[in-house]
Length: 187
Image 1 (tube, rainbow, N blue to C red):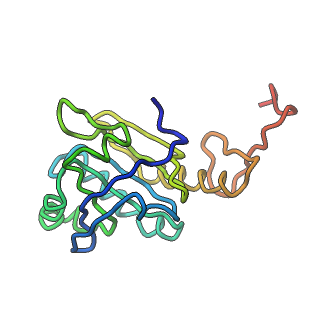
Image 2 (image 1 turned 90 degrees about the vertical axis):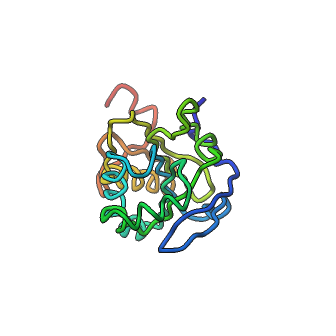
């Protein structure tokens, strides 16, 4: 079942952010754009490259009004230990959610129940809590934060401009499309 255009489900968890442990619920997400960035586990191989890439783009996402929540089935304690042990993870300023009960991973349908790990999944959520974009990749395929930025910009553009859509490879400032009977068969 696809989670596109569904509202995020309730959750409550502990997280690590800026050297502190905090509690986060779905209510904290509402009111601004959000990215949920699921990954299998801390202290692994592809995961730190992805999390570091998102950390390198976090300031730009913040300027766009986007909050980032990375999520693995590890605890907030493990997130802190990883943060303290790794130069790549140490640069993370966004919230690292712990999901040891698998509640959030199940809610977003990325849990591998036979392993207790989340698949690599990226979800763009609008300020109303509705999932607007999803990307799921296999274990060995890392994601690209630059393309995530492009997708967030497209989602924000479409939300702000009803009746327009962003074509393939759309970049901010480029032409969009206004679907109509006149366009059928012309593209």
